[in-house]
Image (tube, rainbow, N blue to C red; front, side, top):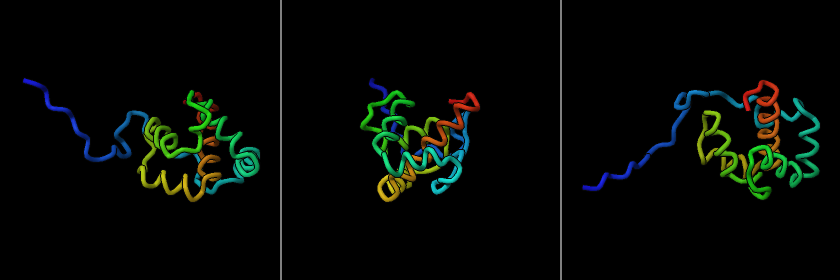
Length: 112
């Protein structure tokens, strides 16, 4: 008799991971790190490659919905794929800057 495959019907939410947390800054919190904000505004591709490199992923993946979802899931940040899609598609530089700010803050806390 074959074992039945496990089908996950809902995306895990806050508290589902032992390292559950929140974003270290909001989506529009550009003033908290002006260097990241300037880089994200004027050289989005460069910042995208930095984020992807920090996460050991392909440089072309930095601005993707999958990258944001992977990061959010890894750190137990509440949200949804739909929210990740909306942030990435309609506010790409802000979404990317938020990821980089979060990575930088987690590195400072030795939690990355």
